Amino acid sequence: APVEEIEAIKPDGVPRVALVGRPNVGKSTLFNRLVGAERSVVHDMPGTTRDAIDTLVETPEGPLVFIDTAGMRRRSKIDDSTEYYSLVRALKAIDGADIAMLIIDATVGVTSQDQRLAERIDVAGCPILVVLNKWELLESEDRRSVEADLARMLYFIDDAPVLKLSALTGMGVHKLRPVLQETIEQYHRKIPTRDVNRIIAEAQQKQPAG
Image (cartoon, rainbow, N blue to C red):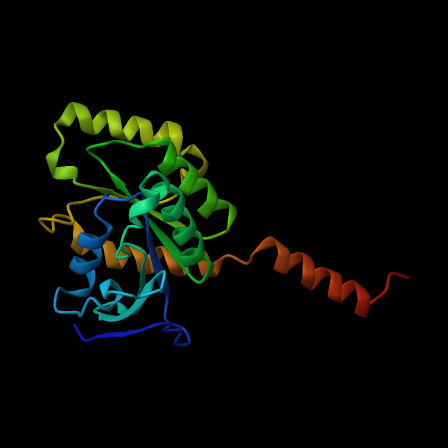
């Protein structure tokens, strides 16, 4: 697929998808699987100061912009704060996104960091697609345990789609783009409450009660 990379791609009408998750859950592998491995990894060049890179990809379902926060070099003196900086980058990314793809390492399970990240995304009003990566490595009993943890810890986004896949082998990745498009379309079909309230208030001002 044709791929274009610039620092901030914001073409009108093209959905923007933020890939977020804890360090080492497979964000880079999934990103490369989605956009194609032939892309130049400009965000990993020495001296770069960018927090994210936008990649415009033509898909059979239409164009998508992926916002990747995975490729930054780890700051060696603050390794203990890696989780914090991952969260900061994710929050910056979802500010400009139409949907957040929350990637969870299924072999580790749903952690408190995953829960915190999901809460922040939910509060920001950004729709979420949950990706359970490395699914192929789990036995059936472990899969049931992860599903139970997901329902218990991320109950507040229980209407979010959940995809079980392997970024490494490509298993299930083909289902991702159609689900992304459907989730984005459903979200935009809903009129936010604040917009409804604003329209009512404007109507009341134009037509004062008798």
